Length: 385
Image 1 (cartoon, rainbow, N blue to C red):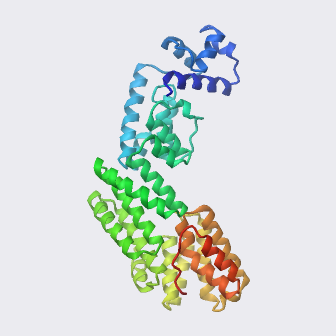
Image 2 (spheres, rainbow, N blue to C red):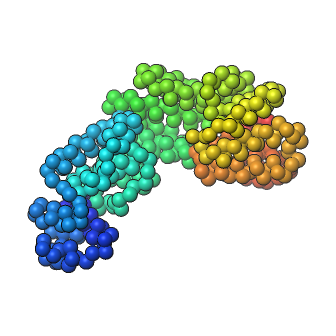
Image 3 (tube, helix red, strand yellow):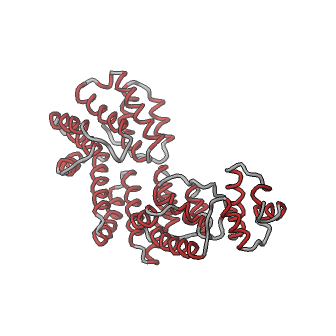
């Protein structure tokens, strides 16, 4: 297991090389070159005075007060992370430059916690050798998109939740359900209500994307209770939105219409869903009005050009009764579908899958339709259009 000596030695080596300094230049006036070489390799039990002198020459300050401040901030940030409080984590890390703490013992923790809080890449070139504890190794694994390794290093509600969300995005719903249920159970044991909420929310999402209405409603009921108790209106809005989206996929267009038509300030994608409901229920004028309104909005939750193209698909169908005979429609549809597969959670592709199958069948491309369904990440109960 690594210790502070290993991390600081590697940090000194990285900073020296970043500045293109020689070992002789850095060691001058502090220690011998051979001793510096051992420090950088983590093989010397160097005194704190020498290490701090080397760090100071590299512009990396560390003292007892900074060590204490870094440790306290790291513990508070871990509590926010492991209790499922992203806002609290952002508040703790957003107003602090983690780089200022790089040379402290909690330096790796704060660098990783900052990256997680701000949803940004890890700036420091950290490696497993820099990690002294299971939770450090778990965070590094999460940032490296290796959620299973994170569970191995630290099997807790947070790591299971991260693994479940990762599986959900890929469309690996069996694995997602297993990990999310474990996250819920561990969070319930620990009293982490927010992680319980997120686990149930994503469990409902998994069932929703598989058109398992009963399973979706079961998980969303629990998620709804937790969201109301926590005052999380965003989660409640998400439950309502996903429920209505699932109703579109199962053909209950009137129920979905009731939700989307009553939204006070719908976003671009909500108006896209409203237009589909109107398209399917013969409200053509209302559908076109929804699309016109969507064109005036920015999209903050999705790639804006893609959101506009998805709206263009609905408009094309509304304006061309024989859209299935138009190559331009097929090109736009397949382009949108491929973007969904490449860039978004698999649920987006699943939502648009029926239109792709409709296009292939109408144009006698039966093999493509068969292969698409056969190779889809999960079994999709396709409804007739």
